[in-house]
Amino acid sequence: MREVAVIAVAQTPSVRRERTRNEVEMLMPVLAEALRRSGLRREEIGFTVSGSCDYLAGQPFSFVSALDAVGAWPPITESHVEMDGAFALYEAWIKLQTGEVDSALVYAFGKSSMGDLPEVLGYQLDPYVLAPLGVDAVSLAALQARAWLEATGRSERDLARVAVRSRRDALENPNAQLKGTFELEKLLAEPYLVAPLRKHDCPPISDGAAAVVLAGDEVARRVCRRPAWIRGIDQRIEPHAPGVRDLARSPSSELAGRNAGARHGRIDVAELHAPFTHQEWILREALGLGEEVTVNPSGGALAANPMMVAGLLRIGEAAQRVMDGRARRALAHATAGPCLQQNLVCVLEA
Amino acid sequence: MSEPVKSIVTPVRLDYVYTAGVASTRFLQGLAQGRILGQRCPVTGKVYVPPRGSSPTHGVPTEEEVEVSDKGTVTTYCIVRIPSENLSVKPPFVCAHILLDGADIPFFALIQGCPFDQVRMGMRVRAVWAPKEELAPTFESIRWFEPIDEPDAAYESYAEHL
Image 1 (cartoon, rainbow over the protein chains, first blue to last red):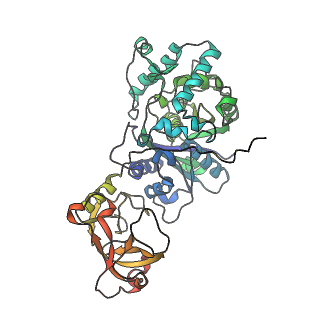
Image 2 (cartoon, rainbow over the protein chains, first blue to last red):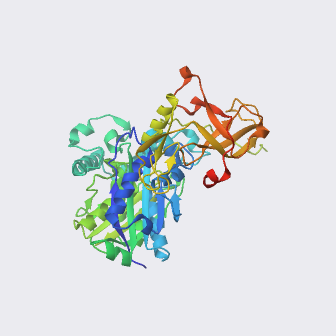
Image 3 (cartoon, each protein chain N blue to C red):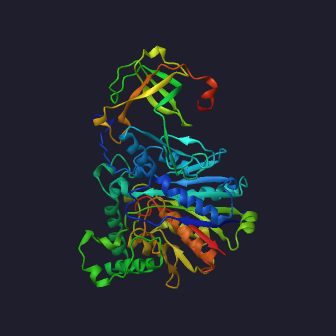
């Protein structure tokens, strides 16, 4: 395997609604900042790949117009995934493995605020029998939460604890959107949103963008003092129909984690893409993360959840800690689809 | 034996509140005043209309605003013979790329005011604006373009913009 590292990360602060700028205008400063931090010039980037979703923008081929932020001249090698940017990063990692390129710019953007997000996400379901029922993303997550509570004997208090910790930790993250000190008892006294989930169990709706620069061995060592080396990365998917899955567990995360080498050594910090509180518990179990592991010090997706960006942000946040020297070995996880259907795990080391 | 189900109807409707963005907002506000506003790339000096806030070739912000003329040159065109529900004009009609004087990228618009088979590359045209009281921040503020009494532009003057 060729050694590949994250050498730079940049992001916009996540906000509930970006009222003035369009996606291109949001992306331009983020791309410029990521490149500046990488020490590479725009022309030196070998491969550019993005993650976004036309359903968020309500416009076909919105990812093509986003290229206006990149500056595709002279012509560049470019690709796109209609997924979270973490999966775009996976494609970039493969491209670097082929040896065709020595660096890659990965970016993601999502203005989740423009449509009715839970409804928009409903259209990723099977269009014949499930989507026409009008089931939305929060209701599906609630089905999963119920399955997990029943299977483990845990309580709604355990869910609320995740929300309290995440939003408290987010106070340290200038890019987080929903943060503060919340009292467990007060949260538990709130009414259900979709039982057994309360509002605090759900992520905020966020607009945002992020970019990550990857480089292969030689380039990474030349331009970066302390690269975050990707020691393992894998993604696995489960069936499309939620009804055929065991929603209380995440076998795809478990397998991806094993293949990425998550259990081959101590993890200092884990950034898990768990938009709903119960999902953090499911992922901890699947990835074998014990109490000694610091989980989501950024606040995670419960503090900022720009769609198509939040997964890439997990890799960015984990990599940043490795690059800063705050962690030696970090795990990042990203998810796509309803109820943790598809999962990517990435292990980063100094 | 029941009939096989060959199709189902599942209506889809999603509503969006769209953000035009800083540059497009300036452009649309310009149309409401009967002006066409572009932005200049700081690297190449090229003027983009409508502006998107970025230079598509260099990925840098285009902060300098430039008003361009509402006169221009037809760089290329096509004759449409298919009716469209969205258009009030009857086919055949002409859709053209128009390079406005002062701009470096052609602008897509309808041509009216002459027989469709007289439209040609290099033809000089001018915007026909909606009446003043109907001007608004929308493309509909420009009804269409029509020929003006000027000699055709030389091919070399727009060859790079085809």
